Image (cartoon, rainbow, N blue to C red; front, side, top):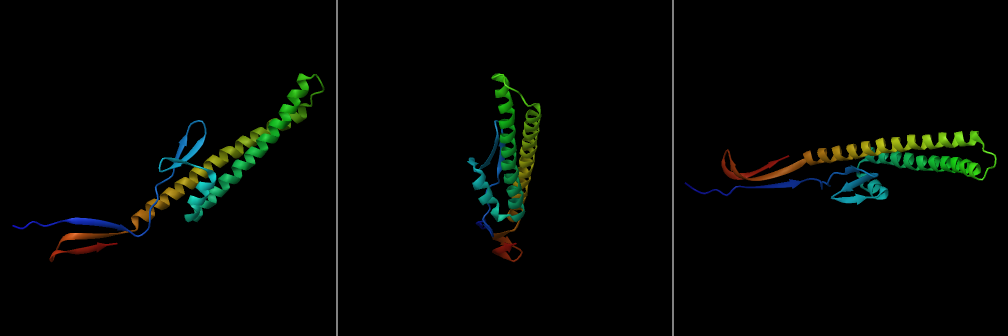
Length: 152
């Protein structure tokens, strides 16, 4: 009885990056390989997947739109609040418009979060598909004895 050496070597056709994870808490934090990602890094990473990159671009646009609407709303409400403190005339219409702008900012922020989550899901599913496209080289027993097999 002989001793056979069995070895399996997996050779991947494409380099597979680690998936991106969303860590929520005091804000939205995206992580890859345990490191936090900036929006710019996330945009660069998703460039390899056109659909994920498009969703990430939408998330970025919604994020900044929400910030601008929110800032304008806070400015209007704060201006009216300041007027009330110094006992000058308060324009409730401007305060109402400010409150509506703040609400619009929250709605853009929510849309941004949904687009970013979808972009990460699309990107990660693309990684799973590319991991499925791998070539495997096996050295060991075959139907004709000891041999080499390649699986695609």
